[in-house]
Image (cartoon, rainbow, N blue to C red):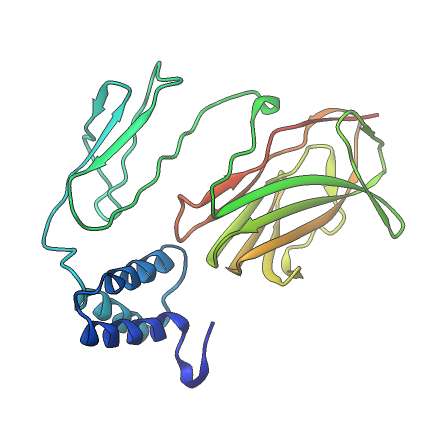
Length: 272
């Protein structure tokens, strides 16, 4: 959000941080302001080059020393400690292939005094009906089908059956607990549904501007800025064929911070 005179809230906070450091350099609030700026950077663009340089300068020249000490992170799963053989050079991320660890606890320890954060992302194969919805504190998504009859819309309930030729609305409800940028919603569309509008283009829904990409098996929404709040995104389809199908899973992810990700539950539907 740009304020008057061309300053964003991040740049303004950086000025406040530098002023606070001049007045009370040893106050704990100085490091809290620095941490707030870093957390905002996790999921948001800091702005133009000059603005970014200003924020970086404010973080590096105020508060306690966060960068001279090189900390070490240790990971245990159950009683087994895991040491990565190769890390991504810039992000520090690494992958571990696991076996027989179901029900065990992940324990992570960092021996440094500075702030740090990370994430654990698991990937596995399961029947679609067994996939449970997964969310984080900052982000969640749910997927519903509405039955369209003229101007009326009725929620499609589990146990009901769709009919060939019926018009339905795929409704995706995204809840963001913080502002995020460069967010993608990928909706795996059921094989029995054909979008009523098959052209890709820019759409405006519920206060969100997105580029909607219609593909053979999915509909994607690319969102430059997702403000904090609850947003309902939707698109209409027609039921095209009989049979039993997966409804498809919807995934929302901040590409600026891929660990901020959530997906809807798996579900089966019947078409008569």
